[in-house]
Image 1 (cartoon, one colour):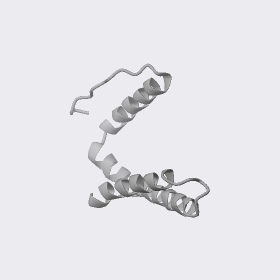
Image 2: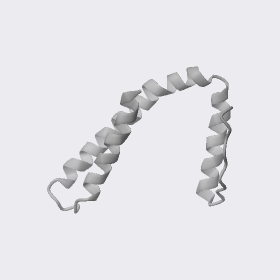
Image 3: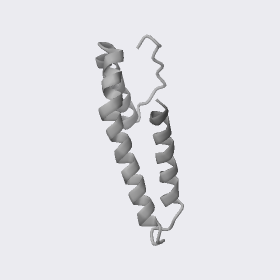
Length: 90
């Protein structure tokens, strides 16, 4: 769990570094590569480690949660966003 919270922090740090540099700066490309690698590593961990754990923990509720997330995504994309609170029973 510690790794799961530390990696997003690292990626956020890596995001700010190239953004602070001019694209012509000598370090820009290197920082961008670091960012890409960090994001790919984190995404792989989510898929390979966290999703099986989430599936096991949520069981049948996972489908319902997926539908709620898709609906929320549609709301955000279309600009018809309302603040929706889902109870802890999800």
